Length: 380
Image 1 (cartoon, rainbow, N blue to C red):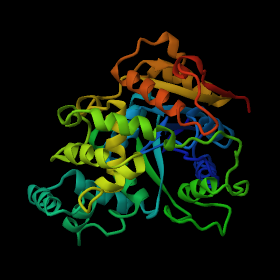
Image 2 (cartoon, helix red, strand yellow):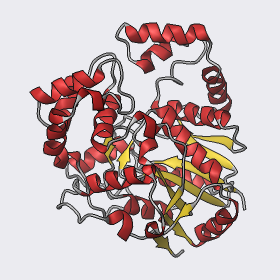
Image 3 (cartoon, helix red, strand yellow):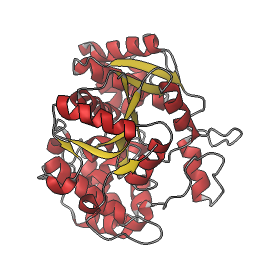
């Protein structure tokens, strides 16, 4: 059975995702999706719970959905990609990695990944100097590689992730082969001229209370919003010490003091992040670091290697893939969380789940869902 891996967030699951899954199935027998859980890489709570998003994917082309732990999901593009690729490596059954990109040119992306993975000391130093002058890391890197890597490769979000996936394949010595599918829409576009729109556009339509039936194949889900955590996050940041905050993932160069100062003058997640934002720090990074601190995601924890494979859902073919995985996996596979002795990575997942449970717009959910909600089973 030829099996492809797909890294996704499905935030929310839309027709573009359905299209990619359909394209993958033209060349592969089964698709394993590794999906962000309660929080997503842009620095936000997922728009709905992970099991609902997994179910949507399973109904429209995915066969097995496993969870990308929050220590990778709420992280830089490089660490996000590493966590996903290394988890797929450890399944023992993934033959290929398929990803969407604005480029659509695998050779171009592989060339860029090779350059970045073998970065010279001179280039690293130039990036460091540009960054120290107040230029954000992504912009500094793009400038340092000007003339070597096309600017679109280091500026378009899906190209950036594609390159990081390939870098992770190289770094881990993976046997998984990379394949790319050209994206059919602009990542940031809010246009709804066709039935395929970006996740950004879909979230905006949902926020505005508009009908999304034409764009989302599964449209019946509870909406989540970080607004519910405004008081909790503000209190936390007004009482946390700089010493503790300095140990949080991706916080350095005094950023902890800037965050605490902002929290003392502002109220709510969005306002605090907006006050911290500068040319040097992108909004996504600020949002991720604030949420990471709230969830206790330290540098040490976020430097961990994957320690388990957690199943969120499957269909009939997915059961066959899972059966083969149980023979070949290099990590323990969690189907029933109650049977798993939690390690620090899973404890962080529990904290993330409990925080997300408070974000449900129709009212907070009861605690303990990580141990009470079973994987989704789709019969098809």
